[in-house]
Amino acid sequence: MPKEGYQPLNRARDLLDTSVEDEDGNRTNVSEVQLSFFEDHEAPQGLQGFRRRSETSVRDRLRSGFRAFAEGHVTIQMVNLGRMIVYLSLLGVIPAAIIFLIDLSVHMVSSARESISVTETGGWLGFFVYILTGVVLCLLSTLVCRVLSMEAEGSGIPQMKAIMSGFYDKYKPSLSMWALLAKSVGLICAIGGGLPVGWEGPNVHIACIIAHHLSRLPMFRVFRKDRALRLQFMVSACSVGLASSFGTPIGGVLYALETTSSYYLVPTFWKSILATLTGAVFYDIFYKSPLVEALDNTQFDANDYRRRQLLFFAFLGVIMGVAGAFFVKCVKTVYDLRGRIIGMRGNRYLIVGSVALVSAALSYHTRLFRLDPREAINEMFSSDHLKLSWFDVFILLLIKFPLVVVSIGLPVPAGVFIPCFLLGSAIGRLYGEVLKVIFGSAIVPGGFAVVGAAAFTAGVTRALSCAVVLFEVTGQLSHVLPSLLAVLLAVIVGNGFGRGLYDTLIIMKVLRRKKSFAFFVEELKRGPMGYSLDVVSRSWPTCH
Image (cartoon, rainbow, N blue to C red; front, side, top):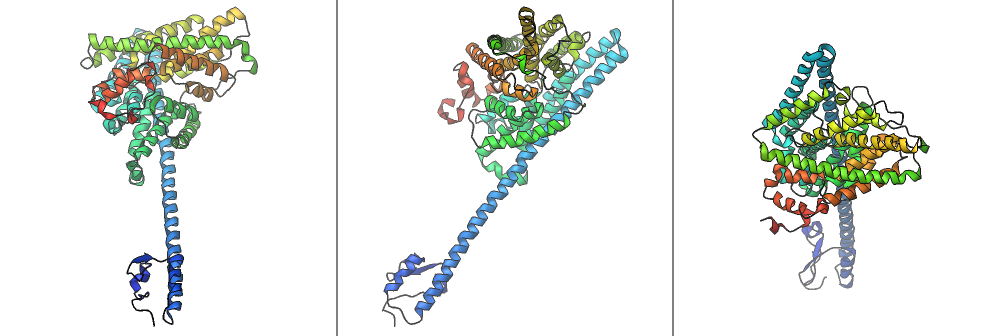
């Protein structure tokens, strides 16, 4: 017989709960160690067999429970990973498809406009038709932005930079479908109307809008609960915007890191690579077709660059740093002047129409000005003899520089990457041609055009990744060292003069009127190096 007060496992509930009561009435979990406690007590005959059966049953239940938990946890992780891969793949393909359709539409509008006014009509009537169509298209661009979403105006990168700095919820209007529609239609009309603007910044904005709305689908809604993961997807979308514009997955990731992120989480890297890779594959398939113009690979020989020329490339980097800072200063001056004299809101149609009129009037009689900028850049990058004269390149630079400066701040969708490429390649080509006259055939001007394009763009945007973008675009690594040196010097010299273009645009934009954004602006005003911010980690009481 058992001792008085001994409580055996006499209830099914104890077994199901995998616990027992000891002599003092305390309930403890059953395990092999705890079950051995009963070995020191006298037990009734038959209880040992019951205990052994109970021990085996509990151990099996525990093992099966842990196994089920582990398998369930792994299953959830695998499901979420699969969803994430699908999400990132769609994030690469959908923006790339939209960007291609926009580019194709721009090509069709420009070709139809030139065919009607220049080829079929000609003369003064053709001149009038060319100007009229250009002005109408540009006015339609700003009208679409005014009616649908004013967040579609400009590059879009300043807004994305604000979102990446912790203001995601404050700038959701920038991520609406109306903004996507206005950005797409406005960009087609602005570039098709002849304004010398690019599409890299708007493409980044478009990709971020797609990322925002993809995460709202039921399949991907689980990702919205994690704020850090949501920001990682937005950074990946910024990378896709550039990668889908030029077919540069690595350069797109690095460029997004430099221009939009105040801080960077390492897990973002593989997500950005996967998304940009799918976008670059789409680019490689469709942009190799004759439907649209694309930047060509360069054909430089191994002997086209010699180490003794490194000093020339370094000096070119310094020149581009000064030129980039001058470009940013001109943009800010024109923006402020327009705001004081004409006004920011009431005369948008007058401003856009005037710039479109001047651009069309200057472009009609010179085919070089009507060319797709990528075609002109390919000509500058050529290692062969330049088909254009020095005078043509100088006039192109003289006319395009002020037009780009004025067009950047217009209330239409506008990017700066391609225009900066064009201006930098023109300066670099002229620089190389002058060196060729002085030092002979050992100088290849096309190499200086490539380095000049990267250095000037870096001087404007303060992004070292411009060199990597050029490596991927040109498909050659023969000018790696001079490109990196020139880009680094351009960024250092530009920082010595002031902030980069995107930070300048942030301060000038209407965004600064937001109460929470005032702190962001104050951080930017701290100095030339203020573009590398960590706003999220700072204390919020300073926002009063």
